[in-house]
Image: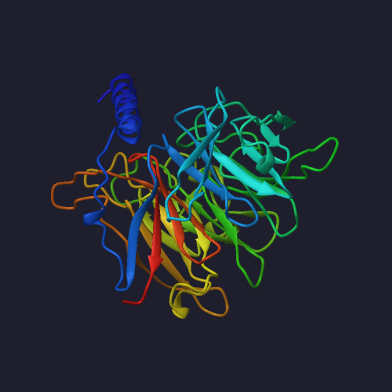
Length: 376
C-alpha cells in the first residue's frame, strides 16, 4: 500500500470513528452487567456528546464538557427523584470545551488553547458569563481536547496531548502541565513528560499522589502497545512517549532517538491495546462495599481501529497499601456486544456523588448514567 492511499484510508477511519461517537443510539440498560447488588439507571438524557464531569461543592450541580460540539452544560435534579430535570447551556460556540473543573464557587472550562473561568457559577446558571484565564496553550486540534482537575496543591492540572499519532515535538506537547489560576500572569509548568494523551487523572486519597490514564499509539497492530494507567508521585517524570510505549515496547520510528528503556517510567498497569482508558476516580464513598475503598474506577471508551473491538466498559483497579496495582477487573460492561461487535454506547468519565453513587458519562448514547449499590 502506498503512503498516499494509507493516509486516505486513515482519514476515512478517523471520520468513521468520530461519526460513531455522535451516532444517535438507543439506550439499552438491560445489556449492562454489573457485580451483584449494583444497579444502573439513566440520570440524564439528551446531553449531546457528554464527556468530562465535575460538580459543585455539595453535588447539587453537575457540569458537563463536550468534545465534538461547542457547548458546556449544567444539570440539576431539583425534585430529588434521582434524575436530572434541569439543563442549562452555560456557553456556546467554544472549541472542544471538553474539560470542566470547579473550585471556590467558580467553574473552569478548558478549550484547546484557552482556560475559561465562570465566576460564582451556582448563582448564574441562567445568565453565565466567563473570562479568559489563559489563552496561550497550543491550538493544535489533534489530541487538543483536555481533561482538567485541581490538584491537592490548589493548581489546575492541564494536559497537552501529542499533536499527532507519533512524533517528536516541543516540550509543551505530550505533557501534563499545571497552572496557578489565581495568578495575575499565569504560566503553565510542565509536571510530567512523555504522556501521549491523557483524558483522565486523579490523586490518591491518602498519599495525594497523581494517577492518570494514557492512550497508546496507533498503527502498530491490534495488540500493541497497551494503553496505560500511570503513577506520578513527583514532578519531572518521563513516561516514554514517543520513544517507548507501555514500558517495554520500543517505538519502530522514534525508539532509536530516545534513551534506554530504563530512563522512562513504566506504567503502573497495562490497560490493553486500543481500549482508550479515559476518565478515572478513586472511590472514597460509603455506599459501595468496603472492598471498593480507594479503588480506581475508570472508563474505557473503546477501540476505533482494532479489527476486533475492545474496551467499552468500566474497569475496577485495586491497589495495595503501597499503591501497587494488585488486580484489575471489569466492573460494568454491555455497551459492546462481543459476538456481533455492535456498539451502542461509550463510557467517557466517572464522578462520585456525595451519597457514594457513581455518575458515568456516555458521548455516544448522549446521556449520563447513575450506578448505585443496594446490597440486594
